[in-house]
Length: 253
Image (cartoon, rainbow, N blue to C red; front, side, top):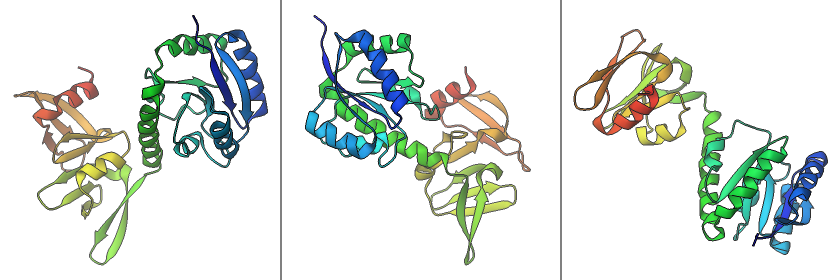
């Protein structure tokens, strides 16, 4: 017997809501549409009052984004995200508890979501979604990071990240190696690793490299690699053994 889900459509664009409602009519045995919401604030109110089993949720909306809507809830329904913005890490949505649809939503892709609903677990979906929100919020912040601030004597210096070849750490300090010289940063590598864009790769507990500067990679013994950078010093860094999988994934071996 097919489970029927009470469903709320949340999107700030009337044509998008209309299109989705029309597509959902093809699956009346699965979705019972109980309402719509045109912005994040109304969405929170309707979710709390109507308590839908499932919501189709736009990400970019006025008042509150889709992620901010979910942060306002203590009990989260099953969520199918709808977005026209592919800059989000959409692979993060591909779990057994949530799904995503790229706009314009197409019938055949909606059918995949219907099939996937058989695997959804309401009991685990809330935690998975909250973890996803934290991850994507961080990634949105990361994408805005284009420079790093360092101290030079009594001044603050802004260094563009595309001028940084790598970061290295010793017991007390993190060094920022740039085209115009080396500087010290107050942030530990563990924090920088979370904030830096995707082209920065941690290859050793004491090293993060800008992959745009990598000139060559050679295999080394004990499951390690030698990474040579195309900076002025032609820096060579030996990767850590515990970063073997990271390196292999990056070079595609």
